[in-house]
Image (tube, rainbow, N blue to C red; front, side, top):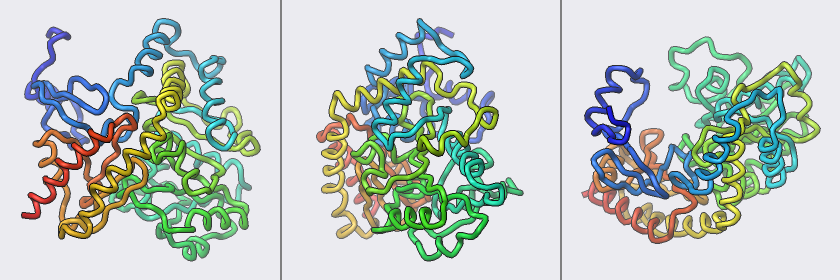
Length: 400
């Protein structure tokens, strides 16, 4: 097999059928190249990607600055364990601290790992008698057993019991019920400031501020899972800045390294020592490749004014898609905050995902009936309008 000549989609699918565990639902295409907001399949077809990398490619496919940094680092040092210091990891931590709430970072490889670290930190930081963590219906925190237990969605629990003890679930947006669940065994509240997998659900006014008060009054840690909402997606560096509510702990992943695997848990300098040596680790966490990619991603966002671009492009989606909720009986609600867009449908969304793909547009459906877009920050207003044209046409055609 010539590595310079890609297989066609059919032959690649045959490889998967024979050798790859079928735990994913996959589209019947093999992607071979990406650039900016576009990807190409093995047959040469081009797609406008409004859900790049399942939210990981917030800077688009193969962002040049990240590619350059990674190539340079590959020739210097690929990996060393965390028993050593590397300049890149220290600089990366400093840059994240300066753009958030001034704390310290623990580095790992994925969102679920970051959330596991936050769960451990909450238990280590509070007295041994306090171990419970309140999470919220519709939330999603990852696929490892601890973060699955934190995910208040029964469909993810099926066949996995017994789950990790100590998680109690409150309705998202319900402060009174959350307060009722607090007892003398509660250690923390863990919440997505904007629910992503749950359907781009934006919190009611005052909800996050109310959680902050509840945590302060009961000496609880407030943990924000910003795996999906963080790192510029809302037009601010982090979603908590949009709402003016600062957490004690924040988890980050997905977009953090411009498409490479990398994640972090940030917490205050006062809380950080509770994650003491020997209690938690991540072998590849903060490795030189991820660190250089993370630094390059921050530099790219700032030097190319991508936070401002995210806010500007967000308005294109808002103006083009919100009218659907009023004049299309297929659409029940449109939710837009920065580059998180959810279109709540009255029908299953799967057929519309396929209809868009057939038209050269890639989107996602979550929770069965919510079309989800997580476009790249480098998307132009013209590309956003083009994507909206295709999406609106697919929706209206489906209505007819």
